[in-house]
Image (cartoon, rainbow, N blue to C red; front, side):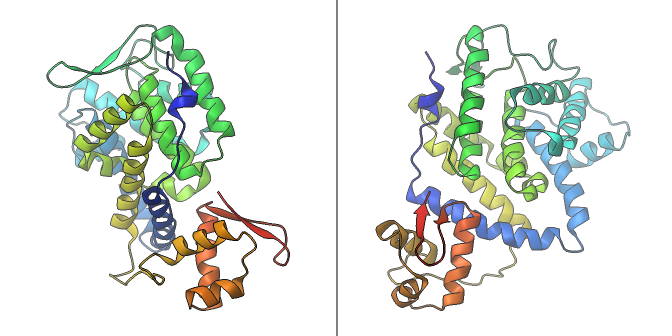
Length: 329
């Protein structure tokens, strides 16, 4: 029997921590772009790319221009099903800021929007057993029995509410477990990707305008391969790192203003942020002065790196500046 507690069990690797930190830095650069003169245009373009990306992953053949036309109410030469898929994705993503990521009832409403006219029971858990098959008809994943779905989804949302994982990691784990449960007769991939963005957007609204789905489309084969391998292992590590990499690539593609500037690293080849985490773990009461002396960089630089760590929810300060201590998440 599938166990949500087992599927959500995750210990971040050094690669995971590096990706989370790199994403935190890339988010600030992305913010600059989105707050600039091209921000409004980029939001509209990224909405189109998100819709096209998430539907194309599932086999929809309509182009970005055709997606744009459908959203504008124009007629295009496509099948009714493909057009309905675009309309459904547009309806769901247009409401994304209103979705509460912690409520399964809201996820069901999102599914109803996404699959209107496409399934017999939109917004309802499946009532039949299903499997995921490859192009050759070979079973890649057998989802749990249909009558297990309600309590598995209840357990998943219970975990989502109580998990102490950072939102970036939590969203990836939710995506993985959701696809493993496969709670709907159709639309699981689209809703899984949507809900990851819902979770991320509630944490940082920049994610509402980030077309991660379009980057996943570019790496579609690896997306399914990594998901399938993680499902066979029964744990999310590889899928978490893959999705974090997709997020980072998307941010860099749309908001990297560094122009090739080298990243600051500390002695020994490690990034300053990694060194800081090590120091905090070894000595939670380590002071800024001790950090400056150890790393050989300015106090203001140390403070900027600590701010990035706090923004990424990797560390937090317990107590006052004097007498308090660092807690590494």
